[in-house]
Length: 449
Image (cartoon, rainbow, N blue to C red; front, top):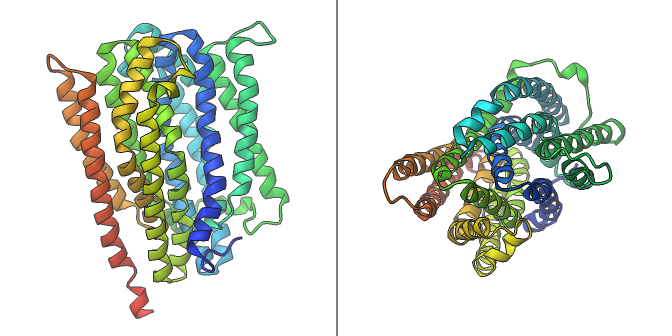
């Protein structure tokens, strides 16, 4: 366990950001590796895998319920020096993860094809996406356990074991992707089915490895199956923080689904360009995300320790660092947007659509960095409802106009990117205002404690 209530706040943030950054890069690489090999199967395969991958946002909404609630409760327990409570929350989160994983498999298999029919541009894209989603579903189900364990570790200030496990997962995926997708060494290419299977096998091995770490390591947190049985009070504490955070990811799913629907009339090239462009943009955002993610455990532990000055210092440092990194990311993306795409496809129509997306939506990066930082701060404070409010406002002000614009004659793709810039900026400003209000309301213990 690492005590984040002592020492330099900035030093803690930077130290934790490095392995978090590496871990996030590795996670995104899994998707990009699959996309690289899938790109050789044509536009429909790219568009199908991209649209199916958007379903991951919906599953992420559910995983966030467990992971964010676990992180906040564990971090605050550590700040109070209550190891028994930290272990109870950790084990309760694993029991909750097991139930959620089983439900994800059952529902996912049932709705894969209907979902693809609702967002895909043509029958070939529907078939590719549905096939990929069925084989990718075990990876999504296993994310519950993976993130519960990772978030509990982050709550106690430990991030390196998760990074090592993610590195192992990516290496396995790198090895399996060309073998299963393209048939390297076997002569039996599974196509998009292989992409989903490669990810599922890699994640399964990652979960098993992280599980072994908790069983063998002398750790602040220990596995105790007797504590897996549902306890109402513990579940309430996890869900009170996790549900709003999950709602935020569900909103992202609706946001992305609206985009796929709106650009569907422009054909597979537009959807493929957006699919690759959005994943590249996700990779570009990783440094700021890594910095932002350090706020939750630092703020959580210091909030649990009732140290308002360190909470405020963490918020300030993370907001400034995330902004600086996103300014650099914006410049790079504006300068080399096409080059960033050429590593994944040589189709000029797809590159053209993806470059348009990157050049326009990269103007959101600074605002998005502020949103990441605010979201993590709300998690540490143990109240994620304000971030859900700002995300809901963005959803309403973006999706409704987007659907209306897509039904008009003369509709152009860049119109929804302009709308994205406006609504993301608005969300960032609203999140900052809500964070300031939350700090004033929840740090009153400094005067009465």
